[in-house]
Length: 389
Image (cartoon, rainbow, N blue to C red; front, top):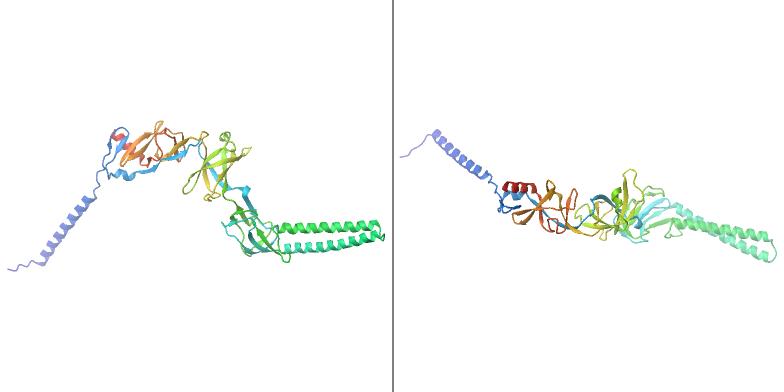
């Protein structure tokens, strides 16, 4: 018996079946989306938290290792790196001209005497012509004096004429010396005598840290910027403005702890070289200059740095980020991860704190170098510990 349902009834049945499937899938999805109950940590003993594996609280925690450092004896101060002017040369042209060829690029190493640029200078050509004319005139005056000497020996002229010839010769020789000095001043390293081309040479060995010249440029002695700045960047100056009360504790030869801004930020040491004997009337600070070694050239002039006085006793210590410290009343604490999912609260004994770090004495500050300190989520752990207690 072939039973055939009416089409409207069949469509209604199919719609109901599809609706049931959709409701079932939706309920299953809602069940999967329901967040799991956060696992409660266990308080094993006072100040210790243990989280089971997979606890969602662990995803909010960040850690950093405690670093072994030299203890500072002052809060950090802002500083700036600069070229050491005792090993820096600013090279300019002493005469006007037009650049023909430029040698080294910015950052190139040069040796003393290397050619920096070549340029054409009509003024130098005129100075060479003046020298040749002075030399020719001096040669003629010498011949005239020698002739006068023979005539005087033969009693053909008076002593006065011989003296005049001698004076004229000395004047012409002085003019030769003046013209020669002018040429030497315009071309200290020497130049060809038959043209007006000059070469500007490096007076010292070092690195080209600035280049303000291009081929074809017109040169003048009064240009506001030097054409080249060459410096030995293996050591730099560290410039610091010291508060007056802190300047009384600093002497030339003292060590400074330096941390340069930028990637790495390794701790360095600089040696105090000079302090100004006066106080800046505007800043009310004492200017300090220190020598900072830079053998690998990694540091660059005009970088900023943070500087602190080194501990006079050379004590070692531990440094943790300031974000890891929790203050309760007059005490400070930090959480240290001692095992997977286990955190211990330690009381801190800081000797110094700034806006970035807390410094602890070695073996006495509550945390040892290398231990993992919680830097983000420490307040969460403290709240969990308080609720567990």
